Length: 203
Image (cartoon, rainbow, N blue to C red; front, side, top):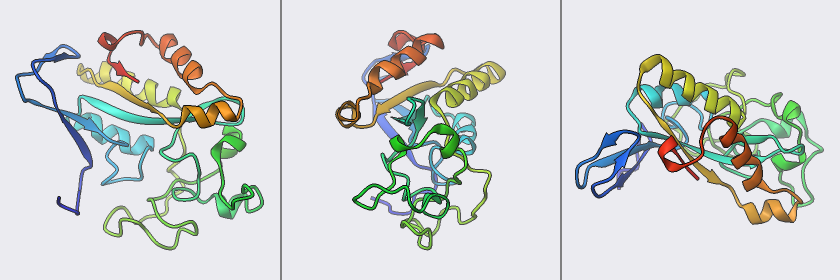
């Protein structure tokens, strides 16, 4: 497998399936933007979403976890260490295992963080050295609501329907923390008109 990936897409092969009004021929690829265009820009940021829509993805993937007060946010990890500057802004808010868990922060606190390319905890080394190297404060953690509104807005302005592919990150761990991740996400999706697969959503 090629290690240098410019645009990270997960390609699935569907068999005679109609998705979002597109009748796909047998063995046609369904392009899903995994974490947005994370080969170009830091993963799961709004900035990484817009190119994914424009480049022709059928679905854009969201990994979803909850904050301290049950805001569903889009993050691949339960922890903040690998993709944000949390260690600099909240150095004493780590768990006893040394890691910083998003579930122990409010969304207002998470909004103060800057999102960076995936790397080590200190931010001095990137996991993918040939990817985006800037350290812009413009990249922020986003809520699932913000992402839905962006995608629906672009669907309207482009006339092209792109769906949501949502991964609930470790629901059992959330339940151990006293939170029902599934219920929170399903309630939000219903509010935005996503009730069945025909509405362009898979969870």
